[in-house]
Length: 611
Image 1 (cartoon, one colour):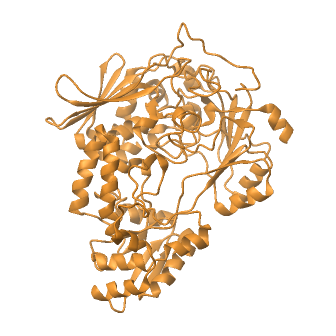
Image 2: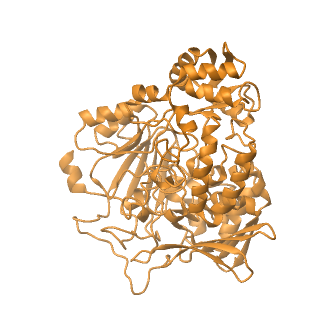
Image 3: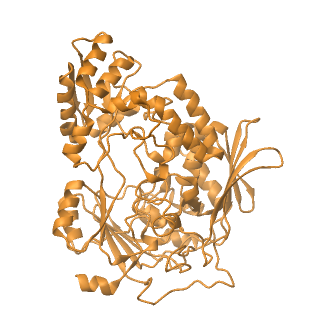
């Protein structure tokens, strides 16, 4: 295992403020332009790119503060899946370190700075974001023409890295990123049939993407599609150098990857490891803390080891062969706490097995009395206590609680939470039997749940609980890929376990509306549809107001019992304290990616003393 090149630190590109050594502040401003169009402008008061003549970028050698050099090693349970960003709307353990989006999460808003968010999950709050390759982002709404515009002001002074290990990088030659590069990249995502956005967001194929100034790119879509266009083009797409695609056809070969991120791919061994080295010409500086103004990154190298076996990953962490490990389950976390001294620890956002979606367009699930009976026959509190040692949560759909989304979360203990909602989360088999009898099922009914093997233990508990009120649940266990295909096709006959979609897409209410696979309960509720249209439009210009509207809507949604939630449980991040300036961050921005390594350094003296 020592011969394996320890791998990459996940996603360090994440954000930082800008390269002017004092950093910068994001300002969100709602205005009306000269033509009466509403605008939201996300801008940085100090622009990045080339260093200011009066402010010097520093490289510290003070061992009491940030230190340059060294490497970290991380472990992934699965191999690298994507080197060409067109293939996926997210990132990956290498892409988020080698390439950059137009905008992304702001490191300075997390634990290292103001603490406005914990970066323990995948969040999308505009106030917690900043421009990367786009220095400013302007949202405009022209309701009269039904046109939404996203105007990206492309950051000047950012260059494609010159990677000595890549022929493709030599082809680009380290030139400056241009508005033409961005136009090419965005259009590639909606015109190439192999592109993920082309396949998964067909309505964006009609987007108009054009260069509207020397350093300006404008995207035009219908107002109803503006939010999703912003997420797909701004949060999900990594611009690429056109000459690489023209020469090689794609960047699917790891040696053809060219980006602007803090690290460059040096080596990749399929199923084994990926090694990234420092980009010496990286444009960002440390935005906050003791290294504010320092040139990033601090590390010389990040290595990812591909280690599918959990016990091997845990052993590598305990021995210090791996510097950090995320997504550690509760039981394993307890063992690490007992048996490994010196590790730092942070609880991440809670997760759960997939909830149960039901065909509300068919009997018996089109009857609210049946749905409410199913909820009352489910003892979520006992499951949470027995399986998760009172560390979880039973109210998890469509949103689990996170600090970043506190304004949209309706808690069971909130004074304005309706009593009819609260009673759904209290185990009451007698009331469940009464409701079933009222609905015409005095002896209960038979039904089927499609699920995968890893969910059997959990849902066997539900099966036993429901049997007490006469619901005979057949567990139809299928392979993961089969369940995914059924879920996407929405071809289940009764019940299915399915994902809820990331919380970062909350304004689009994808689990409550539409014909997408995320709407697994086939909801077509006029109350929800009307509220969703209002929230989707409001979120463009008034995000906080849209969160408040979403919270109000939850009083109705939860009362309908459209989904049987699953009790959540916490996962944990552990790391050795020689990784300095790290606080257990999981995802800096929109996707579940580890995009923190560019901000951290290694205390070599402490590491030597602990090993």
